Length: 599
Image 1 (cartoon, rainbow, N blue to C red):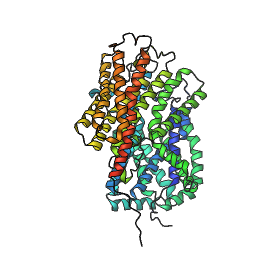
Image 2: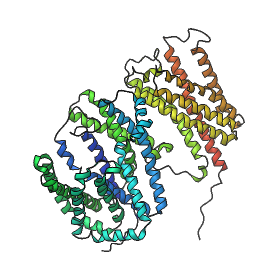
Image 3: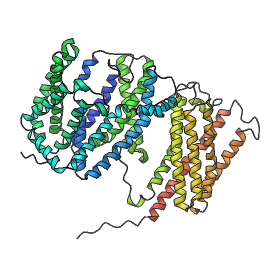
Image 4: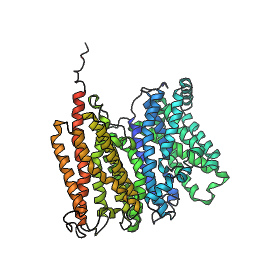
């Protein structure tokens, strides 16, 4: 059989393997909560036998993922140049890496620092600890996102290889010759044994890019192997033909490897026997999975696979933060270990899937969760970015409302009549992070929405000054909201919230900007009413008229009404202007042409 590369096509078997491997990764991390290793957070239960049990997947799971990732990159290059491939990789990997390092990882590292007794401050203090000049001097922790760092780096190596077609062809030809017949068994195995014996005792596995040379020889080797060989059908035919042999060898090697890990004499002879058995299990298991997958899963496709392939990256990003926080909250319940483990698995998968279900529906944040942007119809491309910003404006009140409801649900006995909303983020609140985190994000969304409002006014009316003023008011309000959440009351810096009150002027500015638009009469009436109601509530709550109407027994309800109007009108106005901007773009776009008739 020829070793000429097959045409580029989607491989359902590799998609299934990738999905299953990431699912195993989540279960593996749940197991680490109970294992005798120094992980981020632990249960009150620890099981020594997990030291050996984790060897079920430890030798091969990540190596297989790197191999499949290299194969996926090769299929991507079938319709792209090296430059286009590099850009596509950057667009897919860099936004999630930055978002994860700035948002997801600090949450889990803060919980870890508190849990291990090394830190006593709040989340704002931790953010300063991590991202102050002194903190940045020690590097930015990436935790489980190290995998993205490595994939991005290895993709650079693959793209560099694409720029040298002759070298790439020679590498493929060499691998093709050395993975036929029995060479498929012993050539990769010999490579894995040598690096395990020579490099692992020196470097170990650090998951730090600059000092992880055994891991690079292992993982980069697997990545480039998948990249170079995925389209060679001779390899897949050999894997299928020898799949039973590989499976039997893996089943024999596994208990031997476990016995070596458990027995005090397992490291004798400088650890060479252990390294050999480890490498045998590693390659045999990878080859068996690839062989069985190629045999039975190539044509296994459908809605379930499409859904899981799309969900895998967001689940990977979210799962460890969700798990660490879940352990923090579940552990005090003192559940039996089996029930606790099942609860953690359910929460980790469930919340991660819920996050995916939310983010996949919000076009603006899809890229930071590793999802491809929605395609934009040509007729609506002109104002699509402005509309995205307005969509954030629609989401801000929803997020703020959810943060309040969840924070209240965690505080039994919270009195809506006498207590202020800001108390949900204070020191007396059971979980102030919920409210403060929601307000912080809502502040950022307010800034984005303000830019969207300003650009929309400019698009609809051409007014530059009023557009800039409208954006400025929202930006100041967003800064005030976010800053107040970082410094909960009674910290004097909490009074930055007063910047947020400037949003009361926004309805007037929008009225000014949209005054000439005769097709927005209802919106203008709504904005006028909102401004008047907020003015009345301000006068009453400041006791400027009818003193005593707002008092200690009912101040909470007045504040709720004020907050609902102050925040809620933004979502309504954003929705109306989004519809109008869509219509405006449709009118400006060239009329759709009928499909061309090809004779």
